[in-house]
Every structure is written in structure tokens, then in C-alpha cells.
Amino acid sequence: MRQLEKYRFRDGITPLNADTFNSRFFDIDARIHVLEQLKISWEEAVSEVRNFAAERLNIVLAPARDTIDSLTQQAQDLISNLTAYEDRFFKALIFGIGEGGFYEEVTYDANGNPQEINFFTDSTRTQLIGSIQITYDLNGNPAQINYTIGQTTYRQTVNYDANGNPVSITQEVLGV
Image 1 (cartoon, rainbow, N blue to C red):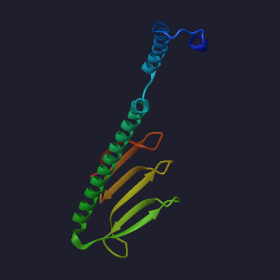
Image 2 (cartoon, rainbow, N blue to C red):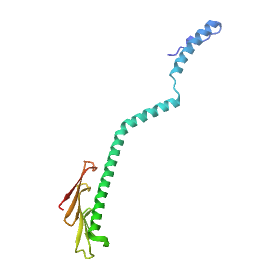
Image 3 (spheres, rainbow, N blue to C red):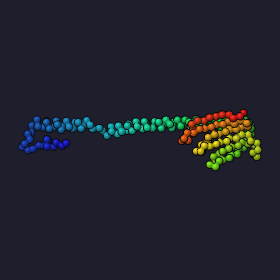
Image 4 (cartoon, one colour):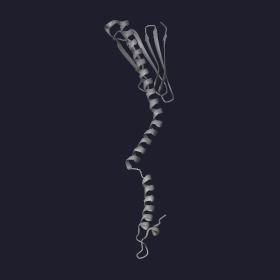
């Protein structure tokens, strides 16, 4: 609410003494002082908003970051397990045929995914020494991988959640 009339000077009416000036200026100063106490600097306002945003981001993104870290670890574990199985398979395959080498034959499914890989000791592909069979789930993820050398089959089954993320891997030996 404006109070201009309270502070207006009039010729011949307004006395020019200390009491008149002091009462007017003290009142104005008291009002300005209250406003100055409320004033905040631009840097403080930006800093306050930035800190609030950082806190909110931490609250909202922390669970997502934890989930991503967990899924990354699961994927690394899956890759490690698959690599270990493949390493054992190829070591057994090389042990079975010696250092001479082998020939492979790959069969693909309708989606272009390798479905079966057979390994032979000869170029005419008559002496089968090992194979890998891969079955896929409806989303195209490898669901089961069988490594067979001679009479021994190593089976690795991968289970996925609804989003296609690997959840568990089971391993077993079928027949020796």
C-alpha cells in the first residue's frame, strides 16, 4: 500500500526541522531494511536451485543407477561363464583331436542365429568329434547351450526376466 501523502512536503506548511525529517526517514528506512533482509543474491538463488536439483536427481536416479550396475554385473558374469564354458569346450576338443586342427559346419535358424555348430576331424566332414547346439527363447536370446564332445554333453541354461536381462545360469553335465 502506497503512502506518498505521508511523505509529501508542502511549501509553507511542512516545517523543516529535525523531528519532521527524522520521523519520515526513519519510517522509510525501517521499510527498506525489511526488504533488504528478504533480498537474496542471484548467485545464492542459482546455487540453491542447483543444490535442490542435485538432491532430487540423486533421489530419483540412485535406484536406476544401482539397477544398471546390477545388470552390468550380471551381464559380465554371464559373459564370464560363457567364456569359461567355451574355453573348456575348445580345450577338450583340442585335447580330443590333438594339435592337428578341425573343420566346422554351422547351421542357422530362420532368424540367422547359429543353431548348431559341428566339429569334424576331416575335411569330408564324416568324423564328428564335437558340437554346440543353441536354442533361443521367443525374444532371440540364447536360452540353452549344449556343448558335446564324444559321449559327454555340458549343458548351460540361461534364464531371462521379462525385459530380456539374464537372471540366472545353470550348468550341468549330461552323460559321461
